[in-house]
Length: 426
Image (tube, rainbow, N blue to C red; front, top):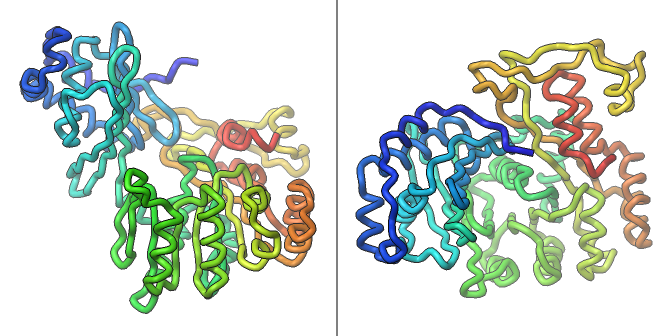
């Protein structure tokens, strides 16, 4: 399916001002020629327009992709890619070279991937752009991840959790030791949730050390360490060193291997509160993932206090959302009958406030599994994932889809959004 289009007049005007000068293959390898090309005023204005428009439209990523006959520029907004411009192929080298200069990359190197960073000021906010280039069949693909520190500065009560889930999490993270895990795919908001937890615990009398790949945001009061695979500074190596720095709370960016898992477990056993993430579809799946890594069941049940699975869904624009009566098919998907169903749901429309998208911002879906006595018994007996999930649900765990349906009934999002992000619950 084609990417939805977003009409951005400022970019069209910027592209019109840039000439379509063709660069020879020899000149494309000449650093001096590339620097001259990237230093032309229209090219500078063009790249500035692309980046500033991305920030204005709350994009999380900017994709600049070279194809055979054109360059495709897309913004990812609230998790969905939107096409914003198709400049001619003749501008591909100029755009790539300008971005490389801003990110302090090698302008003449187009055969190898490169990573860099651009710092911008936008409306008094510091914007950090993480740049990654990738050589492709018809040129270079460039992705810029937009990191807005202000967007991450959220407390737990701003994440869209229901009061019971939030209250339970606040109780779990106040414990003096143990392991609290957040699971979900890439881009599901795990880092934001972990930072919200750490911000709540961030006091002068508590030492918090994090190890991340990479450190996305610097937070005052936290000692933050960036993973560097080139010099073999891995999560495991870093975690061993952190334990010698007398921390109270440790955050490990991700448990990827048995070594890191073992050290995190041992750290929680020796009086530390440890936060980390895993890539699993749901909360009960975190337990089986740790078992698959070779950890003994008694170590898992002794340390893991809670697992939070999450997804991000788009929030309906409050200015233009429109009520409608749900159909019988929609009620069946929600597993509701006419007697228990809401009289109306909300649909996306689109207006000037949301740039015609119908959605504005995102909210979380949350599934919290507390490792209580019933779950511990099943883990110790190495029972199946379905049995652990059933026990957790019996103890009050609300699944991701159930949390989503609650938000659909409240008119905060659409049924389509929830179904798209919880397909693995079908």
